[in-house]
Image (tube, rainbow, N blue to C red):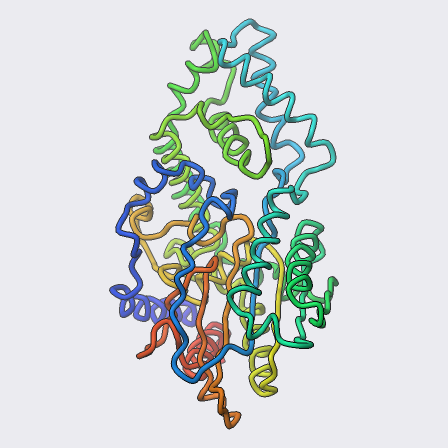
Length: 438
């Protein structure tokens, strides 16, 4: 426990020192962003292409060129993953239909759900065409933005995926674009249980012990921000029956999950219109707080949850050390899940990802999950070396991209967004040593 307290204090001091430089820079509130683009409320269901950044990259320092790219990316958009995710919404509506309690809007909602449900047969968790398209776009832009790496003759690209089909197909989509851009590229694809310990690490040790410590607080937060009364009048013509026969808060949250994930499909039915702006924002706040507690640096869980990705950060550092030592043009691509990207972004302290917030009611003001882990979210570290290089790692610079946007890193620099690799490496390695009590 002493080790955990020390770690949390160190993280808090680091984050406090960085707070002014790592604020949300858009000048808009989360409420304004979601009102303008309700699909952002999907959190981890957000379609990557609905939040594409403006690619205004800062020119590399004079005399520097990129030579290595290290990447971890999530699979693209998918069907909902639970076998009951659609049926659990359909069943109470069917019950209401049998009892003659559906409104006209309720009847239409059920009709659309039943039609769509037929397409989900044996598709739970599968990559959709939207998801495949997202990764084709990312792969194409990798080659466009970093031609020094991806269009280099005989460049070596090492691509590895978890054993889940949607991740494998996402990897294939990106690699297809890279091969199309450079037929000489030597792409190695690998999928194996042997890679799971860092590509999709299970919670263990202190992280596992702290998981769930904020559950009661989040349940209370969920109840405060779930207001299903208006929605029930949209769906049901008898409110006494609805109160007696339906778990209204649960139905609201589950229907919202189905509705917001329709952006993962082409030509999907529109169900989001069932919710007004206040309800959409509340549902996002609930999900935002849940992800922050379970995978982010929440004080409720001791700020420890991002260390679930300690093995992944080890792999990033060790692989980069090898590639920097070799000095050759190459790339490392890793494909997995949002439960890795989210805590990794917090562990790396990209932008505001590592901010600690005590009060869940204030979280939406400083921490927005849709900026971190939409479908196909990715973290890219691009390494630069002098064109006339003597092989010293201290001369290597790194730039970080979070979802293809330039991101701040937790060490000082005079050349933002470029940081000295040796400074960054030591900062992250020290965090891992401290976490492990070394």
